[in-house]
Amino acid sequence: MHLLHLPRLGQTMQVGAITCWLTDPGTSYEIDAELYEVETEKNVVEIVAKLPGTILRVIAPTGSELPVGALLAVVADPGEDPDESAIEALIAADLAEIAATAQGDDAAAGPLVPAAAPDATTPAFGAADRAIRVIPKARAMATAADLDLATVTGTGAAGSITVADVEAALASGSTSSTVDTSVAERRPLTSVARAMASVLTASWRDVPQFVQQVHIDATQMRIIRSELASHGVRVSFTDILITAVATAAREVPEANAQFTPDAIHIMADVNVTVAVDTDAGLLVPVIAQADQLDVVGVSVRLRELSERARARRLAPADTAGGTITVSNLGAAGIETGIPLVASPQATIVFAGAIIDSAVVVDGAVQIRPLMGLAIGYDHRVLDGATAARFTSALKRRLETGA
Image (cartoon, rainbow, N blue to C red; front, side, top):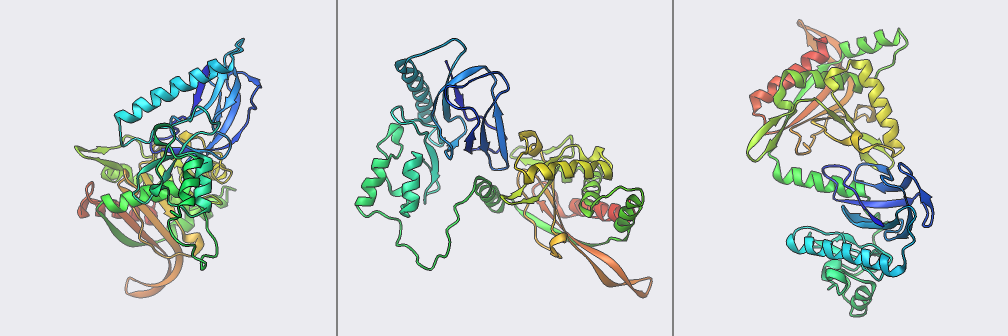
Protein backbone atom coordinates (compact mmCIF):
# COMPACT_ATOMS: atom_id res chain seq x y z
CA MET A 1 0.00 0.00 0.00
CA HIS A 2 0.94 3.61 -0.36
CA LEU A 3 -0.60 6.98 0.49
CA LEU A 4 -1.48 10.00 -1.61
CA HIS A 5 -0.54 13.35 -0.11
CA LEU A 6 -1.27 16.86 -1.36
CA PRO A 7 1.81 17.95 -3.36
CA ARG A 8 3.36 21.40 -3.33
CA LEU A 9 2.63 22.80 -6.79
CA GLY A 10 4.46 26.10 -6.45
CA GLN A 11 6.90 27.91 -4.20
CA THR A 12 4.19 29.97 -2.51
CA MET A 13 1.58 27.21 -2.22
CA GLN A 14 0.49 26.57 1.36
CA VAL A 15 -2.98 25.05 0.90
CA GLY A 16 -5.07 23.49 -1.84
CA ALA A 17 -8.70 22.52 -2.31
CA ILE A 18 -9.81 19.20 -3.80
CA THR A 19 -12.29 20.21 -6.50
CA CYS A 20 -13.12 16.68 -7.66
CA TRP A 21 -11.90 13.09 -7.73
CA LEU A 22 -11.37 11.72 -11.24
CA THR A 23 -10.79 8.10 -10.16
CA ASP A 24 -13.36 6.37 -7.96
CA PRO A 25 -12.54 4.14 -4.98
CA GLY A 26 -12.20 0.52 -6.07
CA THR A 27 -11.08 1.48 -9.57
CA SER A 28 -7.67 0.27 -10.70
CA TYR A 29 -5.47 2.70 -12.62
CA GLU A 30 -2.06 2.88 -14.27
CA ILE A 31 0.77 5.40 -14.19
CA ASP A 32 -0.28 8.84 -15.57
CA ALA A 33 -3.96 8.18 -14.90
CA GLU A 34 -5.82 11.33 -13.80
CA LEU A 35 -6.57 10.96 -10.08
CA TYR A 36 -8.01 14.25 -8.84
CA GLU A 37 -8.13 18.00 -9.39
CA VAL A 38 -6.72 20.45 -6.87
CA GLU A 39 -7.30 24.20 -6.80
CA THR A 40 -4.29 26.24 -5.72
CA GLU A 41 -3.96 29.97 -5.25
CA LYS A 42 -3.24 30.27 -8.96
CA ASN A 43 -5.12 27.62 -10.92
CA VAL A 44 -6.74 24.19 -11.03
CA VAL A 45 -4.33 21.31 -11.67
CA GLU A 46 -5.05 17.72 -12.63
CA ILE A 47 -2.86 15.37 -10.61
CA VAL A 48 -1.80 12.16 -12.32
CA ALA A 49 -0.63 8.89 -10.82
CA LYS A 50 3.08 8.25 -10.37
CA LEU A 51 2.43 4.60 -9.48
CA PRO A 52 -0.29 2.12 -10.48
CA GLY A 53 -2.83 1.07 -7.90
CA THR A 54 -6.41 1.00 -6.66
CA ILE A 55 -7.90 3.64 -4.37
CA LEU A 56 -9.05 1.93 -1.18
CA ARG A 57 -10.22 4.92 0.79
CA VAL A 58 -10.61 8.62 0.04
CA ILE A 59 -9.60 10.62 3.11
CA ALA A 60 -10.10 14.10 1.63
CA PRO A 61 -13.50 14.34 -0.09
CA THR A 62 -14.37 16.86 -2.78
CA GLY A 63 -14.44 20.35 -1.31
CA SER A 64 -11.77 19.69 1.31
CA GLU A 65 -9.23 22.48 1.74
CA LEU A 66 -5.93 21.15 3.03
CA PRO A 67 -2.36 22.17 3.76
CA VAL A 68 0.48 20.90 1.60
CA GLY A 69 1.39 17.36 2.65
CA ALA A 70 -2.10 16.47 3.87
CA LEU A 71 -3.23 12.86 3.51
CA LEU A 72 -5.67 12.46 0.61
CA ALA A 73 -6.20 8.74 0.04
CA VAL A 74 -5.01 5.21 0.73
CA VAL A 75 -4.01 3.18 -2.33
CA ALA A 76 -3.44 -0.56 -2.77
CA ASP A 77 -0.52 -1.58 -4.93
CA PRO A 78 -1.29 -4.02 -7.79
CA GLY A 79 -2.19 -7.46 -6.45
CA GLU A 80 -2.81 -6.26 -2.88
CA ASP A 81 -6.04 -6.78 -0.96
CA PRO A 82 -5.38 -5.37 2.53
CA ASP A 83 -7.92 -5.60 5.32
CA GLU A 84 -9.28 -2.67 7.33
CA SER A 85 -6.81 -3.14 10.17
CA ALA A 86 -3.88 -2.77 7.78
CA ILE A 87 -5.39 0.37 6.31
CA GLU A 88 -5.97 1.87 9.75
CA ALA A 89 -2.42 1.01 10.80
CA LEU A 90 -0.97 2.77 7.76
CA ILE A 91 -3.08 5.87 8.41
CA ALA A 92 -2.12 5.87 12.08
CA ALA A 93 1.58 5.64 11.24
CA ASP A 94 1.29 8.54 8.82
CA LEU A 95 -0.63 10.58 11.38
CA ALA A 96 2.01 9.90 14.03
CA GLU A 97 4.76 11.06 11.70
CA ILE A 98 2.84 14.25 10.91
CA ALA A 99 2.18 14.93 14.58
CA ALA A 100 5.86 14.50 15.39
CA THR A 101 6.79 16.96 12.66
CA ALA A 102 4.21 19.47 13.88
CA GLN A 103 5.54 19.26 17.44
CA GLY A 104 9.01 20.03 16.13
CA ASP A 105 7.79 23.18 14.41
CA ASP A 106 5.06 25.05 16.28
CA ALA A 107 4.70 27.56 13.45
CA ALA A 108 3.86 24.91 10.89
CA ALA A 109 0.28 24.02 10.15
CA GLY A 110 0.88 20.30 9.81
CA PRO A 111 -1.68 18.27 7.88
CA LEU A 112 -3.83 16.08 10.10
CA VAL A 113 -6.25 13.24 9.47
CA PRO A 114 -8.43 11.89 12.29
CA ALA A 115 -8.07 8.12 12.10
CA ALA A 116 -11.70 7.50 12.92
CA ALA A 117 -13.18 9.96 10.42
CA PRO A 118 -13.28 9.99 6.63
CA ASP A 119 -12.56 13.71 6.42
CA ALA A 120 -9.18 15.40 6.32
CA THR A 121 -8.45 18.37 8.46
CA THR A 122 -7.89 21.78 6.99
CA PRO A 123 -6.43 25.04 8.20
CA ALA A 124 -8.76 27.89 9.02
CA PHE A 125 -7.75 31.44 9.76
CA GLY A 126 -8.71 32.88 13.11
CA ALA A 127 -8.63 36.32 14.60
CA ALA A 128 -5.09 35.85 15.85
CA ASP A 129 -3.91 35.00 12.31
CA ARG A 130 -2.72 31.60 13.46
CA ALA A 131 -3.29 28.24 11.79
CA ILE A 132 -6.20 26.28 13.25
CA ARG A 133 -6.66 22.59 12.51
CA VAL A 134 -10.31 21.85 11.90
CA ILE A 135 -12.44 19.09 10.39
CA PRO A 136 -14.14 20.37 7.19
CA LYS A 137 -17.66 19.61 8.51
CA ALA A 138 -16.84 21.48 11.70
CA ARG A 139 -15.58 24.46 9.74
CA ALA A 140 -18.75 24.52 7.62
CA MET A 141 -20.87 24.52 10.77
CA ALA A 142 -18.78 27.33 12.27
CA THR A 143 -19.01 29.42 9.11
CA ALA A 144 -22.78 29.04 8.92
CA ALA A 145 -23.12 30.09 12.56
CA ASP A 146 -20.60 32.95 12.33
CA LEU A 147 -18.44 31.27 14.94
CA ASP A 148 -14.83 32.43 15.30
CA LEU A 149 -12.80 29.21 15.37
CA ALA A 150 -10.04 31.00 17.27
CA THR A 151 -12.35 30.89 20.31
CA VAL A 152 -12.88 27.11 20.10
CA THR A 153 -10.71 24.59 21.93
CA GLY A 154 -10.07 21.50 19.83
CA THR A 155 -10.32 18.09 21.44
CA GLY A 156 -9.51 16.02 18.36
CA ALA A 157 -6.22 14.56 17.19
CA ALA A 158 -3.32 16.94 17.92
CA GLY A 159 -5.81 19.60 19.00
CA SER A 160 -7.93 19.62 15.86
CA ILE A 161 -11.43 21.06 16.14
CA THR A 162 -14.20 18.50 15.71
CA VAL A 163 -17.92 18.74 15.03
CA ALA A 164 -18.54 18.08 18.73
CA ASP A 165 -16.27 21.00 19.65
CA VAL A 166 -18.23 23.35 17.39
CA GLU A 167 -21.55 22.08 18.73
CA ALA A 168 -20.34 22.67 22.29
CA ALA A 169 -19.20 26.19 21.45
CA LEU A 170 -22.52 27.00 19.81
CA ALA A 171 -24.41 25.61 22.79
CA SER A 172 -22.43 27.91 25.09
CA GLY A 173 -23.25 30.93 22.93
CA SER A 174 -19.66 31.56 21.83
CA THR A 175 -20.47 33.11 18.46
CA SER A 176 -18.03 35.71 17.22
CA SER A 177 -20.64 38.40 16.81
CA THR A 178 -24.29 39.01 16.21
CA VAL A 179 -25.46 38.64 12.64
CA ASP A 180 -25.28 41.91 10.70
CA THR A 181 -28.63 42.12 8.95
CA SER A 182 -27.30 44.89 6.69
CA VAL A 183 -25.06 42.40 4.84
CA ALA A 184 -26.66 41.63 1.48
CA GLU A 185 -24.32 38.82 0.48
CA ARG A 186 -21.44 36.89 2.01
CA ARG A 187 -18.78 35.71 -0.43
CA PRO A 188 -16.29 33.22 1.03
CA LEU A 189 -12.73 33.77 -0.12
CA THR A 190 -11.50 31.45 -2.85
CA SER A 191 -8.00 30.02 -2.77
CA VAL A 192 -6.98 32.60 -5.37
CA ALA A 193 -8.37 35.51 -3.36
CA ARG A 194 -6.88 34.28 -0.10
CA ALA A 195 -3.44 33.80 -1.64
CA MET A 196 -3.54 37.22 -3.28
CA ALA A 197 -4.53 38.81 0.02
CA SER A 198 -1.65 37.08 1.79
CA VAL A 199 1.02 37.99 -0.78
CA LEU A 200 -0.06 41.60 -1.23
CA THR A 201 -0.52 42.21 2.50
CA ALA A 202 3.03 40.98 3.08
CA SER A 203 4.32 43.16 0.23
CA TRP A 204 2.53 46.25 1.55
CA ARG A 205 3.83 45.61 5.06
CA ASP A 206 7.39 44.48 4.35
CA VAL A 207 8.52 46.08 1.07
CA PRO A 208 9.51 49.78 0.90
CA GLN A 209 8.11 50.82 -2.46
CA PHE A 210 8.09 53.83 -4.74
CA VAL A 211 6.51 54.57 -8.10
CA GLN A 212 7.75 56.43 -11.17
CA GLN A 213 5.22 57.68 -13.71
CA VAL A 214 5.71 58.65 -17.35
CA HIS A 215 3.59 59.19 -20.44
CA ILE A 216 4.42 57.22 -23.57
CA ASP A 217 3.77 58.47 -27.08
CA ALA A 218 2.09 55.32 -28.42
CA THR A 219 2.41 56.29 -32.09
CA GLN A 220 5.14 53.68 -32.68
CA MET A 221 3.07 51.03 -30.90
CA ARG A 222 0.18 51.72 -33.27
CA ILE A 223 2.51 51.54 -36.25
CA ILE A 224 3.82 48.14 -35.16
CA ARG A 225 0.28 46.79 -34.82
CA SER A 226 -0.74 48.20 -38.19
CA GLU A 227 2.30 46.81 -40.03
CA LEU A 228 1.83 43.34 -38.58
CA ALA A 229 -1.91 43.43 -39.27
CA SER A 230 -1.17 44.17 -42.94
CA HIS A 231 0.58 40.77 -43.02
CA GLY A 232 -2.31 39.03 -41.28
CA VAL A 233 -0.65 38.97 -37.83
CA ARG A 234 -2.57 40.37 -34.87
CA VAL A 235 -0.77 41.56 -31.76
CA SER A 236 -2.09 43.56 -28.83
CA PHE A 237 -0.68 46.58 -27.05
CA THR A 238 0.00 44.25 -24.11
CA ASP A 239 2.15 42.05 -26.37
CA ILE A 240 4.20 45.07 -27.42
CA LEU A 241 4.47 46.26 -23.82
CA ILE A 242 5.68 42.87 -22.56
CA THR A 243 8.31 42.69 -25.31
CA ALA A 244 9.60 46.15 -24.42
CA VAL A 245 9.60 45.41 -20.68
CA ALA A 246 11.60 42.21 -21.22
CA THR A 247 14.27 43.86 -23.36
CA ALA A 248 14.50 46.89 -21.06
CA ALA A 249 14.96 44.53 -18.10
CA ARG A 250 17.87 42.93 -19.92
CA GLU A 251 19.34 46.41 -20.42
CA VAL A 252 18.85 47.36 -16.74
CA PRO A 253 19.18 44.02 -14.90
CA GLU A 254 18.49 45.52 -11.47
CA ALA A 255 14.83 45.73 -12.52
CA ASN A 256 14.88 41.96 -12.96
CA ALA A 257 16.13 41.15 -9.48
CA GLN A 258 15.00 39.84 -6.11
CA PHE A 259 15.86 40.89 -2.58
CA THR A 260 17.09 38.47 0.07
CA PRO A 261 18.33 39.38 3.57
CA ASP A 262 21.97 38.91 2.60
CA ALA A 263 22.10 39.70 -1.13
CA ILE A 264 20.32 41.06 -4.18
CA HIS A 265 19.88 38.32 -6.77
CA ILE A 266 20.01 39.40 -10.42
CA MET A 267 17.91 36.80 -12.19
CA ALA A 268 19.32 34.90 -15.16
CA ASP A 269 16.07 34.86 -17.17
CA VAL A 270 13.52 37.58 -17.76
CA ASN A 271 10.25 35.80 -16.97
CA VAL A 272 7.33 38.19 -17.26
CA THR A 273 4.33 37.65 -14.99
CA VAL A 274 1.10 38.87 -16.60
CA ALA A 275 -2.16 39.56 -14.78
CA VAL A 276 -5.08 37.83 -16.55
CA ASP A 277 -8.68 38.51 -15.53
CA THR A 278 -10.81 35.36 -15.12
CA ASP A 279 -14.12 34.39 -13.53
CA ALA A 280 -12.11 33.18 -10.52
CA GLY A 281 -10.24 36.48 -10.18
CA LEU A 282 -6.83 37.56 -11.40
CA LEU A 283 -4.48 34.74 -12.34
CA VAL A 284 -0.81 35.31 -13.07
CA PRO A 285 0.73 33.13 -15.79
CA VAL A 286 4.39 33.65 -16.64
CA ILE A 287 5.97 34.14 -20.07
CA ALA A 288 9.31 32.43 -19.56
CA GLN A 289 12.41 33.96 -21.17
CA ALA A 290 10.33 36.71 -22.69
CA ASP A 291 13.46 38.63 -23.68
CA GLN A 292 14.26 35.80 -26.11
CA LEU A 293 10.95 36.25 -27.96
CA ASP A 294 9.90 38.81 -30.53
CA VAL A 295 6.50 40.47 -30.27
CA VAL A 296 4.82 37.75 -32.34
CA GLY A 297 6.28 35.03 -30.13
CA VAL A 298 5.12 36.88 -27.03
CA SER A 299 1.65 37.25 -28.54
CA VAL A 300 1.33 33.54 -29.29
CA ARG A 301 2.54 32.55 -25.84
CA LEU A 302 0.33 35.05 -24.01
CA ARG A 303 -2.74 33.92 -25.97
CA GLU A 304 -2.08 30.28 -25.04
CA LEU A 305 -1.57 31.12 -21.37
CA SER A 306 -4.63 33.39 -21.22
CA GLU A 307 -6.86 30.70 -22.70
CA ARG A 308 -5.60 28.14 -20.19
CA ALA A 309 -5.95 30.62 -17.32
CA ARG A 310 -9.59 31.38 -18.15
CA ALA A 311 -10.26 27.64 -18.43
CA ARG A 312 -8.44 27.13 -15.09
CA ARG A 313 -6.08 24.69 -16.76
CA LEU A 314 -2.72 26.31 -16.10
CA ALA A 315 0.05 23.86 -15.28
CA PRO A 316 2.28 24.60 -12.26
CA ALA A 317 5.13 25.50 -14.62
CA ASP A 318 2.91 28.13 -16.28
CA THR A 319 2.81 30.22 -13.10
CA ALA A 320 6.30 29.61 -11.72
CA GLY A 321 9.48 31.64 -11.85
CA GLY A 322 8.15 35.13 -12.58
CA THR A 323 10.80 37.85 -12.21
CA ILE A 324 8.95 41.03 -13.27
CA THR A 325 5.24 41.82 -13.65
CA VAL A 326 3.15 43.60 -16.29
CA SER A 327 -0.45 44.71 -15.71
CA ASN A 328 -2.41 46.50 -18.44
CA LEU A 329 -5.87 47.87 -17.61
CA GLY A 330 -6.05 50.10 -20.65
CA ALA A 331 -8.80 48.02 -22.23
CA ALA A 332 -10.95 48.81 -19.17
CA GLY A 333 -10.47 52.54 -19.72
CA ILE A 334 -8.25 52.99 -16.66
CA GLU A 335 -5.75 55.79 -17.33
CA THR A 336 -3.38 55.36 -14.40
CA GLY A 337 -2.91 53.57 -11.10
CA ILE A 338 -0.45 52.88 -8.30
CA PRO A 339 0.75 49.27 -8.65
CA LEU A 340 1.95 47.17 -5.74
CA VAL A 341 5.16 45.20 -6.12
CA ALA A 342 4.59 41.50 -5.43
CA SER A 343 7.60 40.32 -3.44
CA PRO A 344 10.05 38.73 -4.11
CA GLN A 345 9.92 40.54 -7.45
CA ALA A 346 11.31 44.07 -7.47
CA THR A 347 9.43 45.69 -10.37
CA ILE A 348 5.87 45.93 -11.66
CA VAL A 349 4.82 47.86 -14.77
CA PHE A 350 1.25 49.18 -14.85
CA ALA A 351 -0.12 50.50 -18.16
CA GLY A 352 -3.24 52.58 -18.66
CA ALA A 353 -5.46 53.40 -21.61
CA ILE A 354 -4.13 55.11 -24.73
CA ILE A 355 -5.78 58.54 -24.91
CA ASP A 356 -5.51 60.99 -27.80
CA SER A 357 -4.16 64.09 -26.08
CA ALA A 358 -2.94 67.56 -26.97
CA VAL A 359 0.84 67.83 -26.57
CA VAL A 360 3.44 70.40 -27.55
CA VAL A 361 5.86 69.11 -30.22
CA ASP A 362 8.56 71.48 -31.51
CA GLY A 363 6.59 74.45 -30.24
CA ALA A 364 3.32 73.41 -31.86
CA VAL A 365 0.28 71.74 -30.35
CA GLN A 366 -0.38 68.30 -31.80
CA ILE A 367 -2.71 65.42 -31.00
CA ARG A 368 -0.76 62.35 -29.96
CA PRO A 369 -1.84 58.97 -28.50
CA LEU A 370 -0.52 58.92 -24.93
CA MET A 371 -0.28 55.91 -22.64
CA GLY A 372 0.35 56.38 -18.94
CA LEU A 373 2.85 54.07 -17.25
CA ALA A 374 3.25 53.72 -13.49
CA ILE A 375 6.21 51.56 -12.51
CA GLY A 376 6.52 50.28 -8.96
CA TYR A 377 9.93 49.41 -7.51
CA ASP A 378 11.33 47.72 -4.41
CA HIS A 379 13.55 50.44 -2.90
CA ARG A 380 15.76 47.78 -1.31
CA VAL A 381 16.78 46.64 -4.79
CA LEU A 382 16.68 49.82 -6.87
CA ASP A 383 17.40 53.41 -5.90
CA GLY A 384 15.71 56.26 -7.73
CA ALA A 385 18.46 56.74 -10.29
CA THR A 386 18.69 53.06 -11.21
CA ALA A 387 14.92 52.83 -11.47
CA ALA A 388 14.92 55.91 -13.71
CA ARG A 389 17.29 54.13 -16.09
CA PHE A 390 14.78 51.30 -16.46
CA THR A 391 11.85 53.71 -16.78
CA SER A 392 13.71 55.65 -19.48
CA ALA A 393 14.80 52.50 -21.30
CA LEU A 394 11.22 51.24 -21.38
CA LYS A 395 9.92 54.59 -22.60
CA ARG A 396 12.55 54.71 -25.36
CA ARG A 397 11.80 51.19 -26.56
CA LEU A 398 8.06 51.79 -26.68
CA GLU A 399 8.40 55.12 -28.48
CA THR A 400 11.16 54.22 -30.95
CA GLY A 401 11.43 50.44 -30.95
CA ALA A 402 15.16 50.79 -30.20
